[in-house]
Length: 127
Image (cartoon, rainbow, N blue to C red; front, side):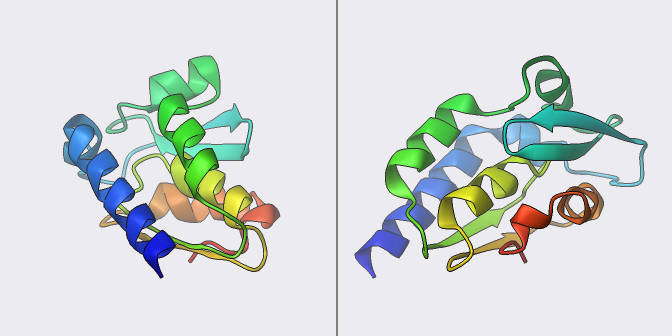
C-alpha cells in the first residue's frame, strides 16, 4: 500500500512540474503525428503538444521522469496518470508494471492516447 501512495505522489509532482504540457492539452482535434520511442510508437497532436518536437527528435519526452519511475514502479503495480499529454509516459509505465499490473490514465482529450494504445499491443495494461 505504501508503494502505491508513493507512486501517486510522484505522478502528482511530475504534473505540477510540467505546466506547459498540462496547459497544452487543449483542443485535441488537431493532426496526429507519430514518433518511434523506446517503448513503442507514440501519437501526438502536432497542433497542441509541446512534447511532440522532443519525441520526434529524441524518441522520448521526459527521460528523467522515466529513469525515476524505473527505480520506483515495479511489476504488478498500479500507476495512475492524470493528463497524459503525448501518451509516452503511460506507454513507458505499461512496460514497467507488466501484464500483472495496470496503468490508469485520465485525460480530457484522449485521442492521441487511444491511437498510441491501438498501435502498441504490449500496452494492454493501460486503461
